[in-house]
Amino acid sequence: MHEPLGVMGTPGVGFFSLIIIGGFAGWIAGMILGDRHGIFTNILIGIAGSWIGSELANLAHIAVRHSIGHFVAALVGSVVLLLVFQVVQSRRPG
Image (spheres, helix red, strand yellow):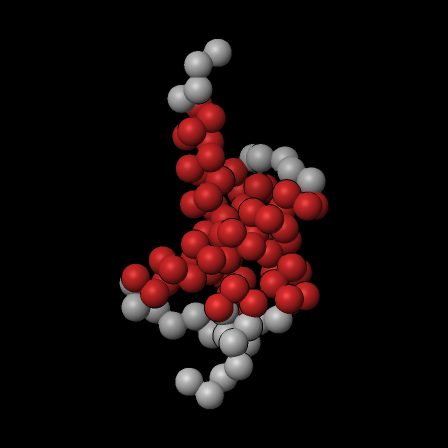
């Protein structure tokens, strides 16, 4: 409770750390699923994935701490985000 609030409500993660962790997680998630994106898109996917992964961890009552924990949460969230995007893209006509 005494920990300062970080970016997007993630304690202990600053703005630049969020960009680095998000970019790396988005890039690896794209490689896992075979999607190729630019660095800016990887960062956005990773940041959104970080939020999704943190929320999934909270729902599963898993504490996300330290940079490695945030990276794993961002990676899991990024993979989920890209999977949802692929499903939506595959259902589009033509």
